[in-house]
Image (tube, rainbow, N blue to C red; front, top):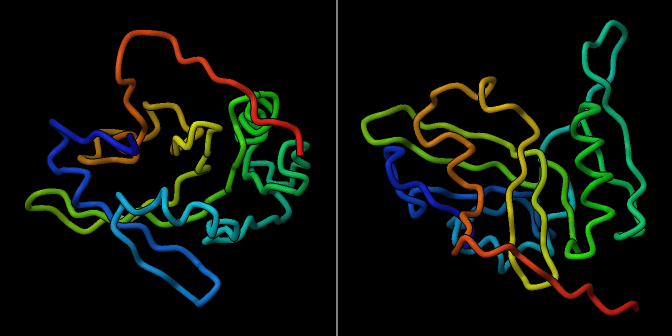
Length: 163
């Protein structure tokens, strides 16, 4: 499941994704993201670097993907390392899309999640590398798009076969 937003002031149906596809900028309902996840390889925003910067952007070489993935902080880099070592992960895209939504009676919002992660079983997850206390109490915030476990059973996976 891509997301769960009950109790947050809107439904997952109210989310849209905007990304840079092969044919230009594309806008799809949130529920269609798994269908287009392979097209989400270009970040929707840049990773600026300048003197005196407080965060540490860079590029991480992913052995799983055989290419570089951008990050904006050491926390994001550490998440990339962990994802690279996870046998269940078969795809990672850095800031691949804008999430758009409007909370009930609120102002339209947008957010570029840090990563979109695809697992060997086809599951797609949004990963944000910020502590919840930094996200704040924004209704229908980015945390509402994280996958919700379907049961209390631990998740297991079978690694993808080597190509």
